[in-house]
Length: 362
Ligand code: AMP
Picture 1 (cartoon, helix red, strand yellow):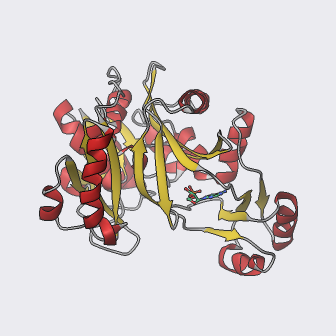
Picture 2: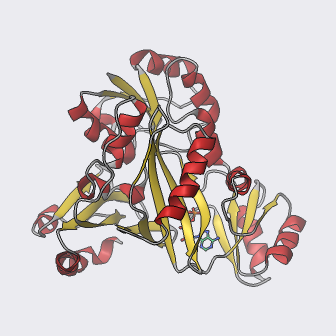
């Protein structure tokens, strides 16, 4: 079966790598000439909104999905009118607007940090008065990896934040003094069956994910699953859904959803019985879902900007290296590595070796 993927970045690449053993082929649509999944299938190189190429994309595949969350919802609807597209376009739309997303969480009784929409300079003053300082001003759309946001700590920060972000729809939300950040990765099949990975603890720096650790038996697992299920059912979701939360005073506060496989689930390639990539493909193709159970202990590190030398990495036992085939660039995710071991103690021992190598890449 040929699967069409909108977007051909590293997530598309890892979907294809998981898909070939299941006898899937791939066609990608991506405007970037150097898209890193392109070598793994047919690459249609065009803007997403180019309807003649989109029509060709639909003819080339039996089933479609997306790996880039900012594919325009109109494009998803064009595709969905021609071939089955999972997750459904409304799930894509739900994750694209931070305000709509927060309202969805509110409607589903999922706790969120206090927030207010900000469309004008005076509205920012009002929001800061209501929410209090510190708070975070974010663009409603197109923000990723900490881009399009500013932390406001004092009244003096408002003008500068408005100068850099104003002129587009914004949202202001309370700054959460979180104890940790976690994500819940779920997969939902076409028949509505769901499976959940153990929740993942995430460490960010400068708004970019650096490290993810799956946590067996986390006390917040059940609560995270309840909220993730509510969103998935509301959106008639099919595929892998990621839900990011802050943990504050022992409770979850919703941050955002991503309607796709997610960076915080990359450990699952080696650390789970069936990876998030394979499970996404199983779900959209209508196959039985695979086990989300852990295989031992694991931790994933992103390579940001550049990757350490493969020969050095390969000398570390239990380390699984993934280069994305992307040129080095500051703040760019160019690869990741997942460290695995049978016991927590063994994992810790291997981390000491890896830490020495990772110095400049996280
Ligand atoms: P986002 O793109 O909204 O996921 O933000 C990227 C990262 O910035 C998050 O993972 C947090 O580490 C931090 N961040 C975003 N919003 C908040 C907030 N309201 N309070 C505290 N930290 C935040």
